[in-house]
Structures are given as C-alpha cells and as structure tokens.
Length: 319
Image 1 (cartoon, rainbow, N blue to C red):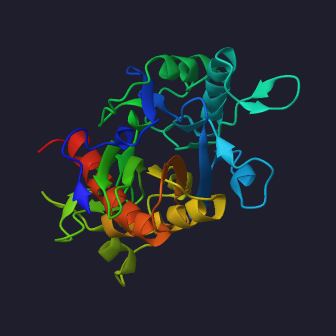
Image 2: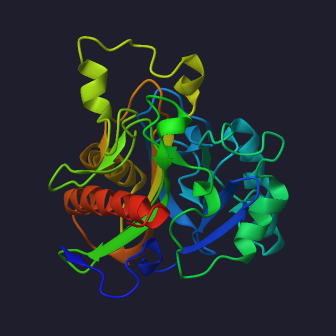
C-alpha cells in the first residue's frame, strides 16, 4: 500500500466529492459525500450500540437498491437527519436518482453524531444546510473542526469539561492492482484517540489531577472506578462515523465486507471503541471498474481509516 502523494483524501477516488457546511457560532454542521451521476455500490456496518441513521436497511445485501447517490454525515443527533432531505433535493434538481418510472428518487443514507451538548440547542443541521454542503462539494476535503465535525469531542469519561476536540479527517492510498482506497471520518468518540503504532494518546480525556491524559481504558477497568462515566446523559453523546470509498469493482456484499473490515481501523486508533455509549457506523462505496481483491481493499481500508482518525485529532487540535 502506498499513501497518496497528492490530496491524501477520500476525493482521490474518482467520482467522489465532499462538501461541508456548518454554523460556526452554534458549533454544528453536516458533511456530504457525493458519488456522481451514476452513484456508487454501497454497504454499511453499524457496530456502536447507540446509532442514529437513515436508509441503512436499504444497503443490506438482497435489497432492491444497492447504489446510493450521496452519504450524509451530520451533527444535531436525530434532528440533523433533516439535512439529508436538502441533499436529496439538490440531486433531484440535477436529474440524479433511482428511476421509479415517474421521477428519479435520490438514495441518500445518513448517520448522525450527538453534538447537542456543545452546540446551541436550538440550532441543528437542516435541509438548507445539507443543500449548502452540496453546493460547496469539491475534490478538496477539508479537515478539522468543519462540517459534521464542528462540534465533535473525544474522551468524555469525565464529561465535556475534561474532553478534547474531535473533528474530521481523511486519507487515501493506492493498493496492489492499482485501485485507490480513501476514507473520511467524523471523530466524536467516548474513548481516546491513540497513535496506532506507539499507542500514545493524541487526544482524549484530560487528567483533572494535572497535565497529561487520563487514559480512558485504564480508568474504565480500575478497581476503584465509579462506573457512572460522567453520568447517564453522556451515554448518548458519542459516535464515530466514517465513509470508505474505492474505485475497485465490488458487489454489494463485498462493499459490506469492506465496511466490516474497516472497523479494525477504529479499534487501532480509538481506545475503547464500539462501546454502549457510541453509535459507530461505517459506510463503504465502490465507484469504479478496477479489478481488485476484496480482502486487499478491506485491509487497506482499516489502515487508511486509522490514519484518517489521527489526522482528525491533529487537525482539530494541532500541537
């Protein structure tokens, strides 16, 4: 696997563009991944215990529709799903969607993070913001506190007072056979962000006793730990969302396998992950015609996603 020498983002994959829109004062926003006029073969794997999603059942193998035209990642919890309606309107106006005989219906799966505790409670991503994100879509994927990552935080075992900034990160690579694999992630995790190689904490819960990091995993298993983890309200305030894209020619069951394998990337860079307090969700998209082995694509997706998570942490809170 060779890291992309140019953009190093999901937009290295042909046909993929990314747009962000946010309310900076309210600290919330949405991000759209557009798949071009022909759409992309899509799959999804939800591992977190507290997800908020739209149209994910449609992506299961055996369903009538296996191609999507966009994926929306958004803040605002369930209220933010309204932003996907704006994306659908944008696509319909351009004649993009699934042919139904009378109209074209855009297929726009979406997933949310909970940022209401740090955002202005009455301001959430809506249809207008989703449409705006489409207008801003380009082959340049910005990172950090932008779009769906505007209000993201990580390391919340002691509450928001001791948490760190989360955000958006992206990465890409060329793999054996010539296929490109890219990832975009919104990091809003309960756990800490760690370097996949050294295990060093890069962002997370800050130690109230002094400088440095608390180490969420160690705190969870400590015999003297209270077990309330900052109170019941924090149980719904986390989630990491990701989109994997490739120009490899894959079927619907194969892209679902790629999404499943990509979850290894979360485990390498977030500690702990897939908790009862997270709604971790990964979408996978295939846009191209390059012949490739699905295992190779899935293995690369895990590595690239881990790199994107690190990039999100560093872009949100540069050292």
